[in-house]
Length: 74
Image 1 (cartoon, rainbow, N blue to C red):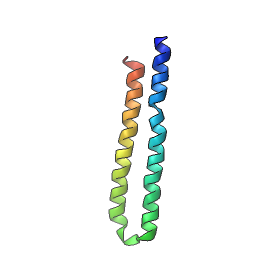
Image 2: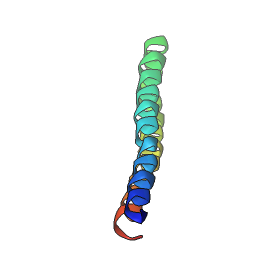
Image 3: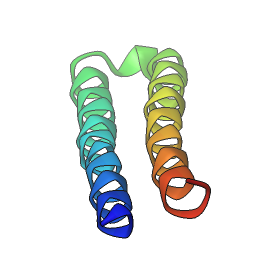
């Protein structure tokens, strides 16, 4: 019973990975849109996009860490 609950909990924790994937797509899609509108700001916008990518990826890594903690520690 407890093993099944652990597996369900870890599966639910990995749902955040799909949201992070969509978030990364939105970040870089917005970068392409912004550079197409104003090419002179490419370097500044790229820096913002990398920051957004890093923050979004951090959320994905936290979700993955929680799933592994649920599976292997508890």
